[in-house]
Image 1: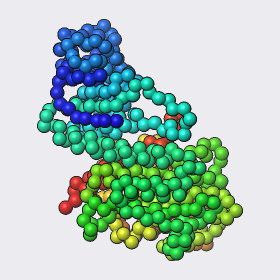
Image 2 (image 1 turned 135 degrees about the vertical axis):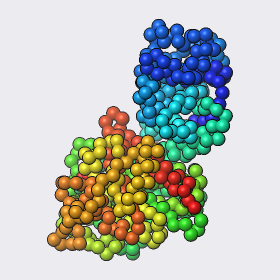
Image 3 (image 1 turned 120 degrees about the horizontal axis):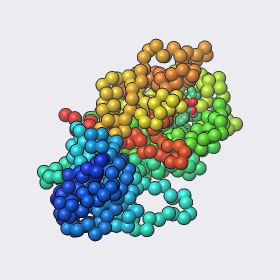
Image 4 (image 1 turned 120 degrees about the vertical axis):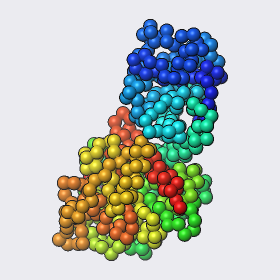
Length: 498
Ligand code: BES
Ligand code: MN
Ligand code: ZN
């Protein structure tokens, strides 16, 4: 998709289609008023006759509108003006782009980016519009033998801004939106692939391609290197599988040589059967998404590289399957982590924390500014926060605050849960330093308590994306979250760098 930014009057745009917003009930947005004027009241006539109310989600396509240069006008319902906020803006953009794509024109000129949203500037509106547009057009059909081709697909989108002095900010927003959408797109592609294609080895190959494309540093550790490092909790998960585990390290060096890096760690379980603590059959296919954390940190690296952020960022992905093979770890087995702490594995389905804890110990070597791990870690998080907010837990409140703010800015929001000492005792074990599960109560918190025992040496936050990384049912597929949150966090860090 080609994008551009323009300022200028809607009636003078030579375009296959100009897109204008209509508020409920039957109220023209400002650019629509301008067109209405040029068209001698054509639009207000239509509204008066009741052709459109302006309800959110509705559209009306017009041909031969008098007094304008565009071939068509697409009216998009925005809902009530008083209630027009981030969510409604995003929905309007999405509706407009999907409709344009099915309308047959090769290009569209959107005036929706001129609408005002409280506390959101033009860069925000264009950045969001770009991300939402690319999201609306995303397809994953590479495994279908017949592709459902759109007959005359949309090739170009133009976002309009009111004033010429907004052009530069809008261009910045556009580039950022494109970079973040490319990152989310990579995450979606990786996460949507089934586990027979997207194996740990495949993730390592994709990381290598990403490194080649953007000149990132890369290192992939094989099983023998993991053994030498003493990563036995990670290896205990890989033991039941025929697929060899991989430990991927990617580096973006956009900062000064002595800038401490921000480290992202992503859970890369390419399929989670539960291991010997086998999961029930219904919906087990969705456990191909259990590498969404890994996919999100790789996607974020793509966005960071595309934006050339002046930061040092390291992405670390422990990748393995969790299978119940003959060599698999059994409930009650005790293993020693890279940190030296011992773990009694009471449930082999609590495997995410077992691979993450060794990765979290490994990253100490980078002397990180902070570490953020991302994981589809607990079903309990889906119960607590549903599919709206990502779970956030942290050992440093200022870092948690930054991530919450980044989530708001990105419209990819997180919500903090407590990580109080009082929960730690739930992990007590009679046979090892700790158990890998804490019982049914507060499952997201006890999982984080487990991780917190491996993150004492640096500022750390954990994102539980079990409810937000993918959708089930008819719309089954990866959401690309939390790439926007992470990208915005890193953009803010880059902007505030001394
Ligand atoms: N990958 C799952 C978590 C999960 C569950 C993600 C549902 C998305 C949807 C994780 O490895 C897991 O199995 N967690 C267990 C932990 C339990 C055994 C303490 C869970 O949440 O049931
Ligand atoms: Mn599991
Ligand atoms: Zn899992």
